[in-house]
Image (tube, rainbow, N blue to C red):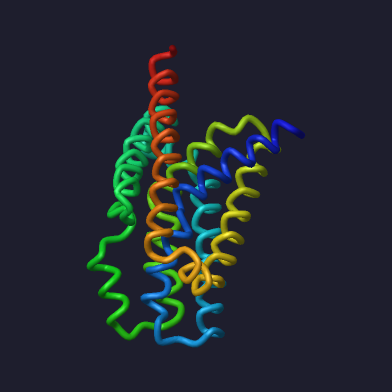
Length: 213
């Protein structure tokens, strides 16, 4: 039980750094600036549900994807580590990763008239929160899970991240007031530092597995 709890905390912490919901607060506020509290909460709910559905789906079909494309988990881990490292470097500079969403896309969605469903799914849930890095991570962790208990732990951590996303987006105004833009950038840099170590470890594990070290 203790080992599963450690596994949950490790994966939850990693996913929190990758999804970086605190860093998504300014984008959430920019695309919902003219909406009321009720509409914002509705968008937050749909965004968090989309994040959960997206990550759970890729976690469950990850092994099938590996087999279909003839790719090993270790090769995917190396590629995923490189992707996460690129994201981490951008986050360390205090920016949202362009692997997830570009500034042009953010401006485009804040200027266009879109429905609540469109805003919740794109750009908030995909690719801002559940982007390539998060998808890659859950696929690798699920593929390397030893048994049913570990696989259930992966799913549980995804659900926990979804709930965290909902809480943070619902509290976005208070978070922005408390932290400010500088505080959010500091948090993003901290998440980037955690992500850097995860990326390097993922690459090391992938190389070890691929070459039988």
